[in-house]
Length: 156
Length: 106
Image 1 (tube, rainbow over the protein chains, first blue to last red):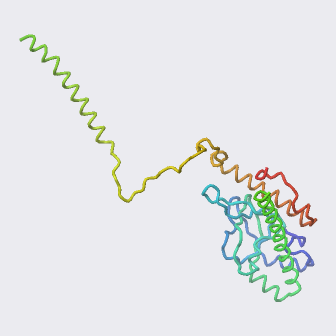
Image 2 (image 1 turned 120 degrees about the vertical axis):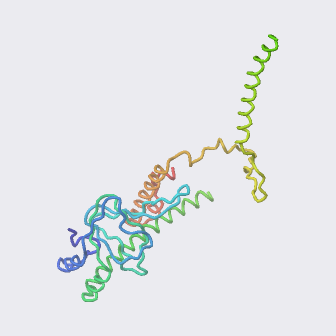
């Protein structure tokens, strides 16, 4: 069972975290199955309870489309923040390489809870922003590193 | 008369053999279709090769299986992500451009 130390619930009290956790439904994803596809409507946020989820993007390799690993989410980590952030479309494909168990939080349940408990909504939204901000920072750095190499290769 | 019969018995099998061989050859020729002229079709010509022989140039497509390429891409992404995370922990110019052992760049 995830604890309040999970990235989504960081900063909440035990009771607040328990109340948010009660909104989630446990789902299992067998190894090899897809949790969601790129571009699909996103109406849930997920918290990995057990196993790991790989997040991939399609890439053309020798004329065929291959899913290339972009990120991984381990137990205690959140994925599918597009469920909370407009335009509510998944920007990656999520697959389970091993048998996984997750908590799925429907957007409507979360927003209803946040409306009733604005302080909780503030903390959780800040946690989601931290997840997004971290990803942005990582990808900014990765992009700049690739650019630096391209520039060095082209003009050195 | 005996000579006539001897010639007859010798030449008839030879004649039959020639007919069989001729029939077989004709049938094979009939099965092989000659290329027909098609007004709309364009002749596909190989691109001109001046100084280099393409056939001897090593092709990356035939060098590595896709699984190996995917594995190298995955390793590259993991290493680059780790380097990017290090940069976020300690944001300096040096950490931003730190080198990794990525197989795609070495």
